[in-house]
Image 1 (cartoon, rainbow, N blue to C red):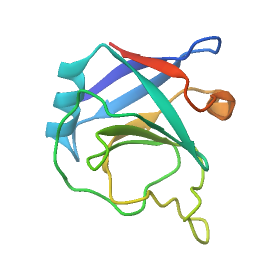
Image 2 (tube, rainbow, N blue to C red):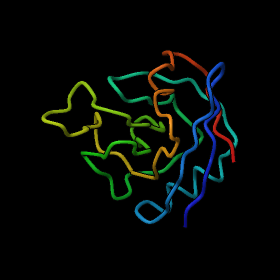
Image 3 (cartoon, rainbow, N blue to C red):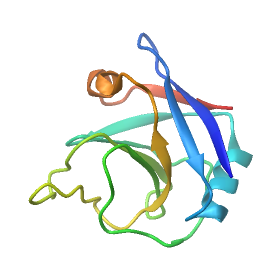
Length: 128
């Protein structure tokens, strides 16, 4: 089942995320049950990842490499991750998270350049 949620970013346009519970159903359910919540973000290459969220799930079909515009949950840090390009450890066109992540959806905004304008430490809100 697919669910759209909004990532509200102060002083920038909102980002629409489409969650899909096909691969990681427990993770998607936990995220939806935790909404709404606000959390700070960190930057790592072309990945935005949050500080610890209220989502608390273990590894669920975790992947060591993700696709462009994937949304994932990083169990180690209880973080939501948005991948809009390569990370510092990516090689040869792949997008590699720090450690395996539970892929939970896609960034579906037509204008993804917003992501490159987010500053480290910004407080964002995830809402239904």
